[in-house]
Image 1 (spheres, protein in one colour):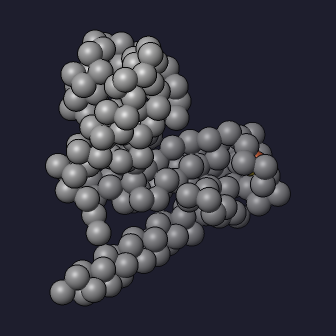
Image 2 (cartoon, helix red, strand yellow; image 1 turned 30 degrees about the vertical axis):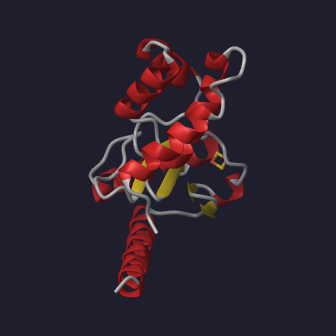
Image 3 (cartoon, protein in one colour; image 1 turned 180 degrees about the horizontal axis):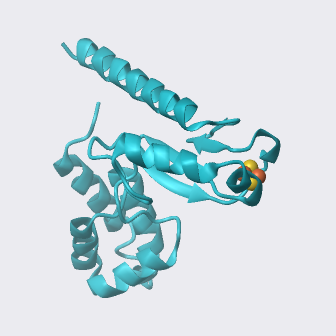
Length: 174
Ligand code: FES
């Protein structure tokens, strides 16, 4: 079952408390940020403020660390992370058309997440599947030989699957 915000905050606080009696308490900041991202999905501003308070570290320093390491997400990440390959082979075969089709279908720009937190749009360099260009990856799955229409179709299938899954979960909770 999904955790409430209070539970999430309590879990992070317990994690931080585990380091309190250690020497150089503040040096555990990266571990704490990892845990915060695992719990919340991304590093929200108010979560960073909480960490700042709990660890007695200025928020500006925490923000600096979080933006320095690319594996920290400062915005929400959708259930499905779409990576459109803009490597040379894909670009030549029309990757930009695929990218534009995704933007139009989802109504978002690069780096954004749909308001329902289902899709996040990113670009990437060669995924090593040039023979299938143009290519996109959705989470860990490669989709190749794409056309704009095929890409839109794939997105709609993912959305349908997510809706069916949510309906199933709602039924189980009744
Ligand atoms: S350039 Fe896209 S997979 Fe290689």
